[in-house]
Every structure is written in C-alpha cells, then in structure tokens.
Image (cartoon, rainbow, N blue to C red):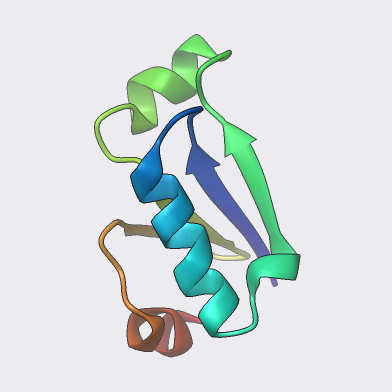
Length: 74
C-alpha cells in the first residue's frame, strides 16, 4: 500500500490531516506531494486539499477525514 497526501505550503488543514494520519500510525508511510509547483496537480487538487490517495486502487479521500475513515479505507 502506498499513501500520497496532496498538500500545499501554509495549509493548516494539511497539517491537521497529517496529524490524523499520525494518530493511526500511518504518518511514516505517507508521501507528501506539494501541488503548488505543478499546474496539473494544482488544477486537480487545488480546491480539495488535503487529499489522501491510496494505491493500488486510486481511492482518494478528501478532507475532512477522521481516523475511523482512514482505518476503513486502508
């Protein structure tokens, strides 16, 4: 399982999302992907961040999510 958290600089919600991932012990497995330097990622995720993408399968979970949401999805 691979986890990507789409974020941008200065996003307090992104920090909150990372804290929820830490609560369930997944923070070390998460790759944080900065969308601010990629036009396509900014267009796709700009209004939705933070977004957690779970691979394989491509399931995306938009914020706000709770620890129980993560445990059910992973």
